[in-house]
Length: 114
DNA sequence: CAGGTGACCAGTC
DNA sequence: CGACTGGCCACCT
Image: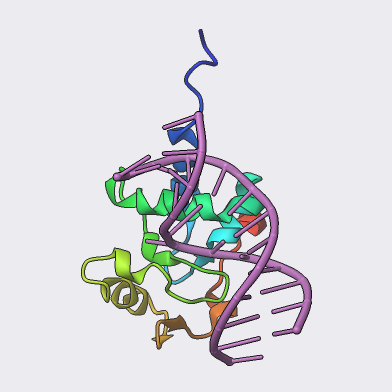
């Protein structure tokens, strides 16, 4: 036994954990998280994991996760789809045209912290 | 079991 | 800068 149950959701948990580590007023990208987990070439899996963030517990600040260009690609997965931008602006992040302003300034790299 | 899809990324034209 | 291609791998039908 032992190493039988140690995958699947575990990967998502890892993503959620990193996402929760993102400080307020900061954002990170899927690729950065993927790279931090050692799966830089599987950035898509991070995105899928974020889709599950809504059912995760504690809740994951998925609004702090954007694509590598600072674009709010996953805004339509929120309710309402404008919630993502609202939350970001509420944390002090400026968003314009579904894109984060000063992205490099608010960008938080997990590799830098971990 | 196979095919299509996708909250992505990087490279090329 | 916009559009297209290839790669990556889990989830859904």
